[in-house]
Image 1 (cartoon, rainbow, N blue to C red):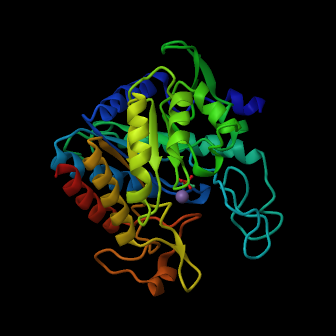
Image 2: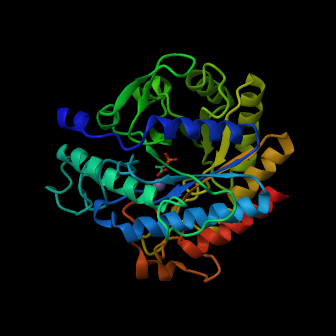
Length: 374
Ligand code: PEP
Ligand code: MN
């Protein structure tokens, strides 16, 4: 713990403050939030080539969105800290303790590799620092040969799920710049609380409410409108536009039925949250050949439903949260190349959930841009 606390922060307070400003604009309906990257970053995949490929897809998507909507797009990578995974079951199909992300144990299917190893937290810190260096170098103008990125995508931020609290609390500093004294995390610009750890009486919500950073909360189909308002009051007690992003992940069959009452009740509370759509996590299923996957048309349909709900209620459909990679993987079904379940084994590389590949991501960006511009 002491060595973790001594490690240099990954992000600066000034950058985090700038993101908070940008997110306030999103909450007011003046910008769009695009968040995406690997489900789980893996130490072995932490190469500059992989990271740059992911950032290229994210910023290319952002450019499409910015061009079509004429709104600035705030790009936030799931990167430089996305090493811990919440799991639904403690054991895998082989009866081994489940893989919980490289921060905790190894994906290798042996009892020894699956035993949690705290020294992995130190490795994660070093990997995150390396990834952040790639992000900084990728920003436009960072180096003379940096790719030109048109359309208002000038900044890049990093985010991850705040899951392992022993890790998360290792880089906190007092922050008195806001309406009350808080703790600024140096581990990422934006942190979110996941669907499995959002118990209102639990440690993760208690942690999130102390943070000075902008925060996200995943809300699934069992979230009630009353709970949503409880979250908003807890996590945005001073009514700061964009402090809280509610990331709905309802599933394409449920979003149209479940989301409206939540949006209405939160809007009536007067809090200006960002409404973001995660069209991935409510649409996961196991294919006949055993691969965990998602269909692009289900993902697209959840996004359509999300936009339809917000259009009807007059609220801003302000964000998209996706799992993607620039690597040429076959993890999600569908898209222009018509990836089928039988194609999944060819290049199924994810350490956790299935990601959109570059082509599927760009198709989706175009579809979202059409909805957002409509
Ligand atoms: C994730 O974002 O990888 C994740 C586990 O999401 P959720 O908490 O929404 O299930
Ligand atoms: Mn995931």
